[in-house]
Length: 68
Image 1 (cartoon, rainbow, N blue to C red):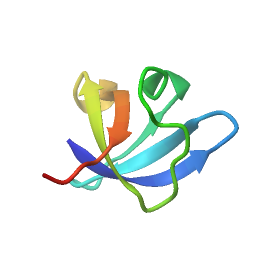
Image 2 (image 1 turned 60 degrees about the vertical axis):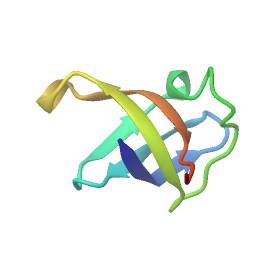
Image 3 (image 1 turned 90 degrees about the vertical axis):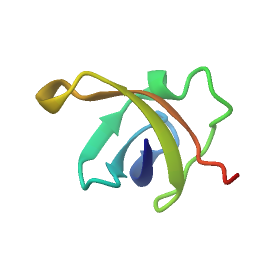
């Protein structure tokens, strides 16, 4: 799923994204730990992986969005 970064703290590597369906989801350092992501900026497009649904929807991975 693709989303846009809405908040990001470069010291803690935590933040939030706004999904294309209009849902804001927070993420922690664990979502970027095994990725090349070291810095994000508000407004940047990213690809996210999630688990759960509804109230339990959570981000498990944040990666840079790439164009094919």
